[in-house]
Length: 256
Image (tube, rainbow, N blue to C red):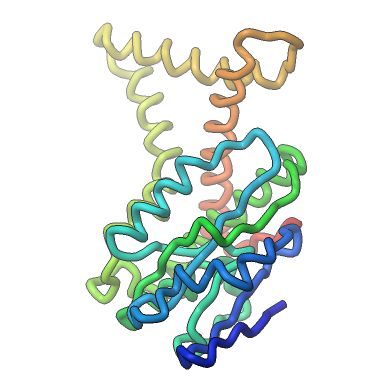
């Protein structure tokens, strides 16, 4: 669905794209919040994204802080898929097979010499956590989309990308983490020095703690730490599956 929001005194024509049907859009996001974010007097600011607030215990403060810092120091790398706005004159055709249009379009805006900014006042209210299986499938799809972006837009790794460092740091380094973890575990098993034995037991203990999260005992003092470990392992498993999807050419389905 798309909604045109025009501002006669600025001559801007925007397209708001709440593309994730699970999310409910806060009315202020359309009627007022983007006014400040797009900085009508600053013609360099031509794309903005809002905040997806999940009505669960999930804490997204770190992600929000990262996006705020990226925006303040230059330009954001992507947008919140549920709600973002782009100046109509900067819109480009999106290949139909694109998984992450909310990164594809903002990066095309950046390539044209403009900025992507973050506005925390534009809010989208998401549904509660729909369960581990659906969240895992959603994460696999998102990470598969990162690999696909490199295939669709190889310029992202070249000097043509003015925020190449931010893009690699935010979108690509996370794809390397599971392989680095496997290398750390293997080296701890193979190297004889005592420090590596300590590292091995530490890693095995951490992975054992993640498995403990599956037990779900009531009033478990370790539950909070086990859940954090489980989430970490789950996200990195999703990265491995995403890599496999990319290698074999399997398309990741959108799970709503």
